[in-house]
Image (cartoon, rainbow, N blue to C red; front, side, top):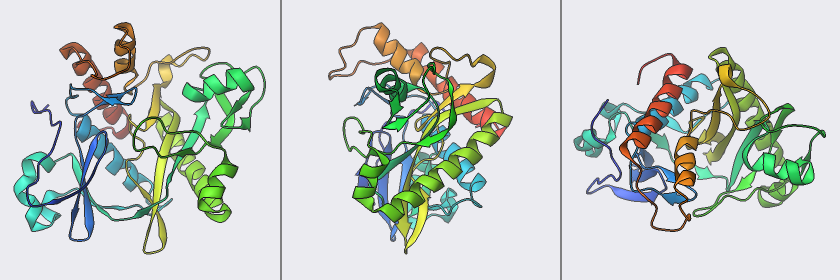
Length: 296
């Protein structure tokens, strides 16, 4: 495992296009270079401690899924081979190898497309209060982490900072038009069902996940990251027990630690002890290994 934790990238002479909580995005030759750092956020704040190998897991797992889903949807992915990048990028190989990908520049649709197959997180909270998830009525008597009768589509707004806001399908259609809304819903559920069925063969439950889509030359493509521990809830099937929270391969371990120290969820965010960072790294790498059958 590389000793270097990369919290920020610096590519002098390359135009920075955007910076998210985890990713640094650059513009080069009409394409985008997405670099996944080892930053981790919790409760909407970026923590000062990086997670070893996190960026590599996010990138390599996304690439795995882009390839897996090729017959379901086109994607924005071009290559992750630094030797195939524009020449100006190759001098930065040390920052890019294994944690970056060159993608087509897409006109992104300004909604998050969420698929839920199980009752967890904000969905469970809403269900307890109203019997619905994002306005979708569900049968009475369900318990936390129960499998839903069928996967549901629950879109949300894309927030640059703070929480995404869950919205109804009708509200989404008012933002993007009804025809595109229906396409996004159907494609989201198709991708989720295909990925969830595969993951089950590996002993992993994908409880829920979110996708982002955009247009490239008029074609709807899958973009951003795909089916990673940052964008999904992955539960080990062998420990799955409905009726409460589940063990997971995602950053819930970090959230649990922050809750245990009673952080007030205001800046500055506290650093993580080495053992918490290392344990979180282990969970990310395990997710990659179990789902792909390969070592990182």
